[in-house]
Length: 424
Ligand SMILES: *Cc1c(COP(=O)(O)O)cnc(C)c1O
Image (cartoon, rainbow, N blue to C red; front, side):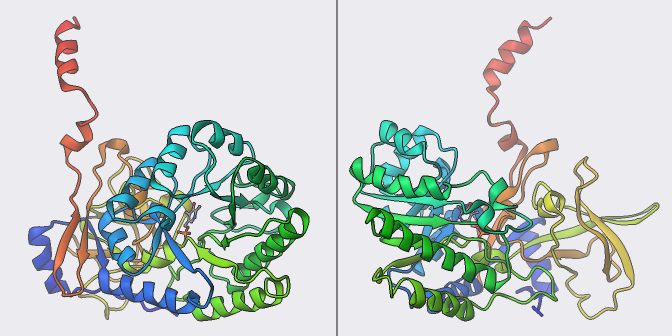
């Protein structure tokens, strides 16, 4: 069981919404920091441990700064994400660049920042050499293919577009060494939102065994392995949160039985968690604006799937609560919708909820990762802003809501004016 809480009372929300009208995202600094410390407490037992926060989960430099203060680095996979890490003061090897189908300019930018480049494909060795040169430290991403089962979000590894095959990765390190690389790392990420400890421990075991095999076959030692992200969070109240200590202990057992006897210790262990770090500590705060009763009963919110698309994209569950109605009996069955002109713009389908009337606040839980970040502008929908609840209880706006002007900002107004006057 995981309790679904929200840090503000209904009265506090009423007050806050006078300054910042709904919808908005709210993140809880204290909870994020505590969570970061728990992660470090559990994984700190590994040599050279580093968590590179997956920027795509919550690409906001205010959040990155808080995480950096707790000792986290960043995991980036695009040029703007690299710039966000830089904005937060995250430097050099504290940045992991785990991209795929990577454009040349992004390799150059990653090298400018001194990020650890994690190659996604064998052909990228030459591509990177030609476009950005070979850095001293290079990581490669392993895709185990049929050797590992997948999960719902990422799919089966053998169908996934990521990483090197086993044969390719064994050939990659000697080639990189010949081209001048001196330090090496090994990466994998095969699951997303996976709650099973065994699954992640098995992945670690697989990667440790591969590090041993690479050493035996090529003589090349890894400086560290990066176990990627993909650790799940309990979106449903009946789900159980991942026990970090239990997970780290399970991985340590694998380390002791594989890495230590092979003489590869101290091999560094790193991770790239995103969802687990901020997911449970962010909420999409909305208000109901309409109640519509046709063949089903609908509650329409002032947010839509442009603000949070996980439910529409993969049927994801986000828990819903109504401030002030927490203890009411759930008597209603609603589809909870947004205003986008797509019928899958629903935050919940046939969800049992308390009575909701227009004007009620409606909170979507566990939206702190892959939430606002996945937003888009289809249908002229403007994405909401982001607020941070500081440790001292104050609230800071860390991103304002979009305006129509933002939506038009990529249009050249002068060219449009000239064009309009020339079109007959
Ligand atoms: C998305 C992603 C992550 C983070 O995944 P979470 O499920 O949020 O932990 C880490 N590494 C890479 C390469 C990713 O693409």
